[in-house]
Structure formats: C-alpha cells, structure tokens
Length: 305
Image (cartoon, rainbow, N blue to C red; front, top):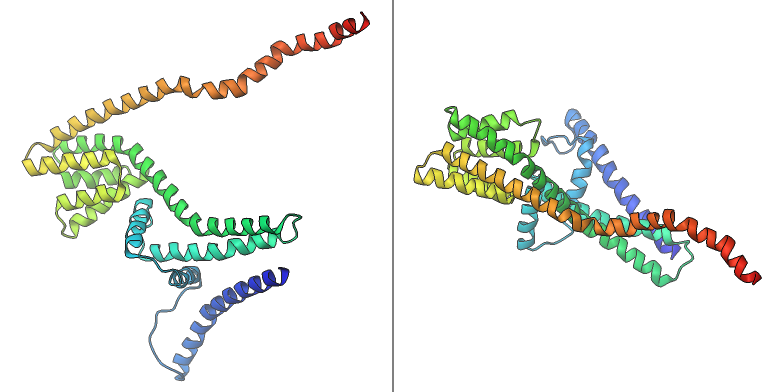
C-alpha cells in the first residue's frame, strides 16, 4: 500500500514539475533560437509564468469528456456565478480533474499509518475523490446563490435610482448607464449586469433582447419581473416612468410582506434554541441548588434512620 502511494505521489509531482519546466524553459529557448537564427522560426506570443496554472487546468479539462447538455447547463451556472471568461468552463473541468486526483492521494497519505480497517481507509479515499471531483461544482453553485442574493439586495436601490433618472428626462438606456455608474461601489453585482446590458445595446442588439439576456443571466425572480415590465412598456408604448414607479411601489410592498413573514416565523424558529440551550441552563441555576441540598442533607438523614 505504501509503495503504491509513493509511486502515485511521485508520478503526480513529476508530471507537475515537467509541465512547469516546459513552460518556463521552452519559451526562452525558442526566443534564443529566433535571435540566433537556428531552429524553427515562428512568431508566437510568449506565455507569462503566471498563466501556467490556467494552461494546466485547460489541458486537464481535455481528459474529462462531457455531453453537450451538461456543458450548456454548466456554462449557465458559471455565467450566473460571475465566471464569464472564455476559459471558465475549461478551468472548471481542469479543477475537477486535478482535485479528483490530488484529494485521494492526500487522503491516502494521511490514513496510511492510521490504526483502522482497510475498508475504512478505502471509503475515506473514495470520499476524498468524490469531494475533490464534485467540490468545484458546489463552489460554483454557492457562488451563484450568493451573487443572486447580492443582486436581489441591490435591486431596490437600483430601481429607485432608475425611476429618478427616467422622471428627470433621461431615456431608459441612459438611465441604465447612469445607475451603473452611481452604484458601482455600493452594489457591484447589479452594476456589472447593467453595464453588460449597455455593452449589448452598443453592440447593436435590440433593447428587448438585451433585457431578456439580463433576466436569463441572473435568474433572479424580481429582476425577471422588472424586465417583463420594461418589455411591456416598450412594446405597448406606455410611460416607462409610470411603469417603473408602479413596480417600485410593488417591490416595497413585497419587501414589507417578506419582512413580516420572517418576523412571524421567528417565534417558531426560537423554540429549538430555547429548548436545547436556555432551558438546560435555567434548570441548572434554579433546580441545581435544591438537588445539591437534598444530596447533602436529606440522603444522609434517610441513611441514619
């Protein structure tokens, strides 16, 4: 068992050192060959050493096959999580392969000298492999949920500012740009989404298509409702300011109702902390002295009778 673990660790370290050495040594060698006139002359963009990890993850992602449906769903998750680079999907699959190999190796090295059964060691190694393989997916999921909550939190302020901008005479496109500028530091996530809408409009997309892309990217229910209101106002020719004002009032009422619902659930949620945390300490403080007095005085008295 120890020989197998030693061989696997040696192979992983050797492959990693070889890849890093190729990246750091082959590029200067090609530059020297171009200067001296020897070797195959070809103009290539040099790769910075800081990009070695990204290239390694990209190469590892090619090992793992994926169906087209899975790729599409994973791309949507990455976009909703804020990972929108061209190599985001390859980085994710590369991380899955890398952690799926490294985690069981590390776990095997940890449990090698443990005083447990071999079946428990195998289960621990398999669990580490599963955690390393599915861990990046969970990270992307948690990151996406957190980003959606941040967008939900900043949507009310963005909507109020948009209402002010539209009522002051700005168009909807200019209002979106102004909201993105004003909320850049307060609500970064929703600012990025509005900036993306502005870029799509500048690229020549229709406003309806850009707004629908906004709803699909974020997958936030309140933002989807706002997009539906803006699309209907644009399609039927109604006043955008009036529609935004009505939707802002609706969001305030909804937020108040959600707060009242959470306050009503608070009493029920406090039952378990009170029962398991407060009541035992209360019993110790109130009943403890009486029990100690009974043990010290009453029990000896009964024994003497």
